[in-house]
Length: 224
Image (cartoon, rainbow, N blue to C red):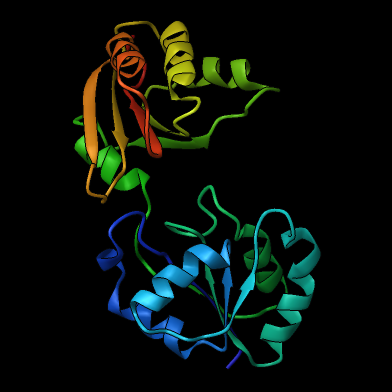
């Protein structure tokens, strides 16, 4: 049966993977992995020997057509990223779109994504929210920050440890020092941590504390 299955993988603890995801990975003809070295750790942990092929942001533009042809020919293919759900700030969209356009069945399993636990434990309103993901590094960054500052709902930003202080500082400049926010890091891992406070307090915290791990920043919406 021709099928592309998008498979979420753990963002931290390997035991967070679902039984259904393991079944799909075992029974697929091929696993497309963002980084085969990272995925091999997961597969080895669960005794899975399905063949892998690299599928990442540097080659996906060139390979989606031929991969869609393989799937249309009857292969069952699983798509994974290094952690979380492919397509959410990770490669995956281009292949999904190609398959949809060609009438190939696509399914996405429910599972891990970093922003949901960070959002829930932030203590900020979550009835409505905006997921931003990674901000532009240079072009358009300041414009986007100003737009986010005016949103009336909680918003979520992903950031690396190398830019988290800079991003928190810029958010404080655009949103105001006293805007409530939350920072979560190392979600589902041994040293998982969530710190809540104003943007200014969070800047001070991570200026003192060396940032480590991947970060999810959750910021309260603008209130008139």
